[in-house]
Image 1: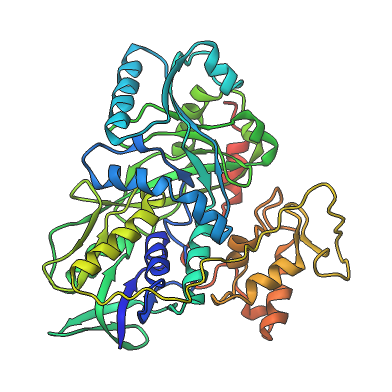
Image 2 (image 1 turned 30 degrees about the horizontal axis):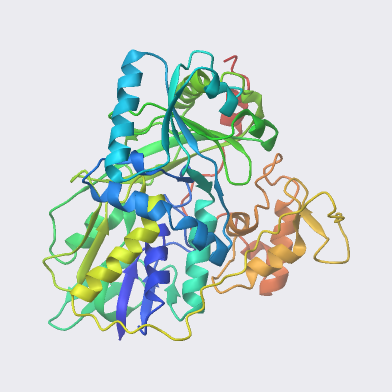
Length: 481
């Protein structure tokens, strides 16, 4: 019997698993997909938000500012990729300036000490390519960018190193509540546990219903993005937001951790929480809005579009609590700034367990460190295609991913058997050609290393994620604005 079962292997479940692995506990993570971080934890902005971003007095606000301060140390330990950039929330008129002042005051209440309201020439000092129409901005120095899927993978790899069991392709079908334990019935097996932590994202209300809880609903919202090449990364130094609206933080302009230029997301309510399609009409609006911030990007440089579905709670805030069903802990409705808050959420769950009389004994042999997969190459890197040395044999020429990096990713402690799983770990296929050159080469290496035939290696595994639509990309590239 397990001490704790965590349902969901997104960034929140991953952070909880890693934090719990510091204690003498028997822990299991259940994930219905065939890899970790395949849903919202993959398809988001990758922003480590500042403390002004959520309303004072909310869990979102409290945990965002705490989580932000944890990233630097986590990256030193887990090597997933984090870069502090700062952010500007820009305004164009007096009404925008009023909202910026409100954000500033909210941040001060939260205890932020990194905020400044700037105007005039200082805007262009920080962001030379910023629109001339921008007149004022909130400058938040603590904001950063990370690779959200690499972060999630790193957390779970480290949790497994410290004794956590990961069970992929185990969809929870029902939960039986007994006096001293739960029996979690999955698509593959029945598993006993003293505690259950519901970190199942979009499905967290459904999981809560399985133990008779119906006090919240998940209201899914889709956000669509356009990702462009690194050649336009020089157009932005910080994360550039416009003033937020009732729908969310609005369209941002940023570079990803790895340097790609990116714009988005919008926010639209959806009924089908598995619909991660993108639409040309929505993406046109994303482009037009983003040009108000940075006018000079070239949409012909678009590499791909993608979208993610956010799990917004009907309560309007994060739900992190032991429920009325003893030892069943809901960690639900974790929308933005959930990525930022995730390490602080994990610490809060530890406190909940302690208050629930869980026996938490700290391990003496906890291993905090995890070696990264992606190796940054400088100009001295002398790799070439078909080199006999795996550490120099370039498989993905756009991102300079080597055979050694791919082999490393395959043989780590999370099962990897698809081309997209390798892409999330190594960036093979994320460059200008979007895998046209390296996809077959990656497939060959996976088949060789797993001793299976190449036709058994799928593009996306069993995930229902939407593949890039080339016709849609080509349409966007031809737009005149």
